Image (cartoon, rainbow, N blue to C red; front, side, top):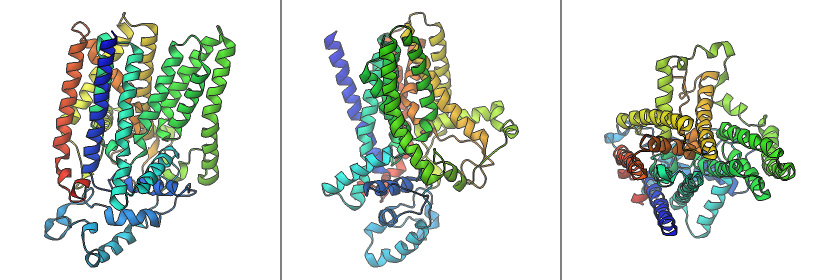
Length: 494
């Protein structure tokens, strides 16, 4: 048994290494600054690295512009036919000072008018990356090398994510369905391109993964330890202080903790109460502090009202919600297929077109729907599940549903004004990266759905199917992104 466990851990370590290498290759292939608001995220990184917390929605700082202007590639949102000879010009940082100066002047004039509407975002990601950037500068990395140094932090984060997926799958104990290998295998090869750029969405799955693991410990414990109470509170705080889109996920986690706490009160009220108080303190103090900061500087505790106004979004009357196309079969499928496709492969653009392949997108949408439905049937009917296993899988399902419901609610609840995406013509908020906190719960359900359908065959068959799916995802990712590797603006052409 020990030898099998040791061998399994070696496989997971290998998957962590492969995941880090995969992220490294693609992060190096994409130039700066991507269409995923990477310039805004970098602007905040420079401010946090300098020890300055944003206090208003201001324009980009001169320090960030000194990197953005010379190193930004036009290849994300422009096409070659917009340039002389229908060819992208060489990077400004490869041109002579005389050649680059006029373009730099015009580019700076355009960029310096951009308002950073991400300024009210919670601070954890930017503080972490700001520290990492300073470490890179300390060891001698400057200019574009220091930009890629920031991106390469994602290699470490994805390795942690894969390991967390393994630990959580092991905690469930469903070895006979192949979860311990299948879940980290899916996480290691999931082609979500937000992992290749600067974005606070990268940290969400790690922070919520830790919280999900803590909640599982609550569910199976007879009485919570003080350490578990403190760790749970810190994980709640970390998730909230990374991205506000984790709020629906946090709500599900808190409901599960409160329900378990009420049950524990009947058996060991003293220990349960003290652990709960620790959870409240460890979560409430940092979250409350940030809410006060947001209220004082940005006008509301979430810091989102002004940002929404800058995007020209306005709340719709409740009576107008029901006219949204999402309440038709076609509209519901449009929402599901788009959000799941982008949850799997991201939403980066290249030459003003989203990096996607219709065959892969349809596979992601259909397989996710079928396997999540199979997982729900398994949760309800699989008589070999223990109470804890059923609760854990049901918690994962609620987490994924909450993430989807949050995006659907935003889609129907706002008039998107002059916003390009979402828009009045296509009023669907389908940014799958906003669901990235639910990556591990989704992976659990997806792999469990496969395992349940193949339960009579054995775990090896489930793992083979997962491996086949991820091989398809990897091949499609290489096919979709092949043009990016030829860019003169990327790390491979330094």
